[in-house]
Image (cartoon, rainbow, N blue to C red; front, top):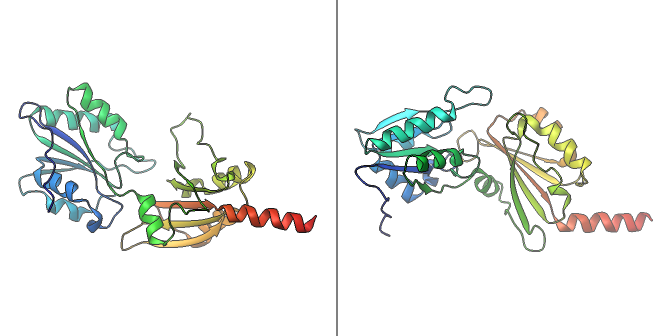
Length: 260
């Protein structure tokens, strides 16, 4: 077995690790993440983290729930930042346990900044992000030679007042796109992508509650995305996985030539 990497902690300042718990299934947790959980004095964990992972922590470790839900902000991010830093300043080993990968729509930037402002360089322990798990669940590769040579990740939700993400990405042949937090904005996303020139026939897969016992899948095209979601009533969290394979553009071009 490979030796575990040692966290850069000191007794005076403690240690902060932002740890990815993976997409849902407990056996997708990385070895390093499991090691940090076993070492932790305090664990601040999110709503989507499997509670069974907390059993990896030692008996005396504190477990603090700091989960968020869309539209309900019981734990403001600034408050979580202060809690993490306060515990580390007491010389404790702090784990901030997040679903998926902490660097992918996980508010890691704010927590890194808070730790650095306190003179603590945090450790980032990557996890399997939901987009990778969703593609694996439906047996569709994120990229495919000759078909999809560009893979992008975006979100369906932005802060109030922020401009929407670029919805023209799918218009480019050879693009695969994973959208997090997108099912509530599906109709808006569908309309914006079609208006930007993405083909109506682009295949779409929706993967709900990926790598859990509640996982569900549905398939659609870009033009039928919102209708499919209404019919299937898939719950969140879900990944929208959209593809514009190069062969689709070839088929469209061939059809246009024959029609002419």
